[in-house]
Image (cartoon, rainbow, N blue to C red; front, side, top):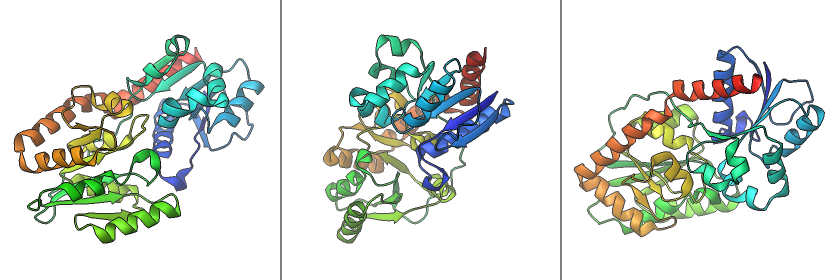
Length: 316
């Protein structure tokens, strides 16, 4: 099939949507399809459109379905789709109606959809290949947060949590990711100057992110809103334990019984978990065991097979 894959963010953004688009294009090409990855549909004919993000890709979705009403539209929903846009945005709602099939990236995503929408929805977990762990550097306890600085990610919660650690803590926390506006830059620089246990590494190439992750002893994801975070897949691929904010996107990835949740926006509770992970080997081991069990859902072969099967069904 000739497939046009629409992503609202191109290669230069290096965010989760782009990594998903690039990985899915690889999987579909491996199955013999021709895939064009575009930010805006150029109008050239295609047998199927796969669009990431209902609202941001709406212009392409509407143009394609109007031009080719009988051809399938496959729509993958992101965090801002599921937990904001489809509730209030008319274009996002129309994209759901136009879609022949919908993909959510974790099993709690279906909870946000109407029964009719849920009936045409499937779950495809994202994935990452195995990442070989590397020895930690220095004598501290390395904690990473990964992602561009924007409000949905609550990016400074880890920084604020370091204020509540015991004086004896050896935790050294680092955030990898660029600021998306001047206010975020200013706040990151202010916190870095004020805090001794937290630093902002800024924009970091993906390969370097994975190398840093391979050496980390813990990863924190503090988001207010997630559709299904790539960084969770990568942490589990590197066998790095995860502490996560308890919100639907993270619970859908890590499961209800994950032992490392803290309430959204609660740096004091996060600090308690950070201290426990550093000082309680049994707790850290429990986090790692749970991550290994969830990792089975996030294997590349499993993601590829699910996406290829869905596209084959639409082709039929």
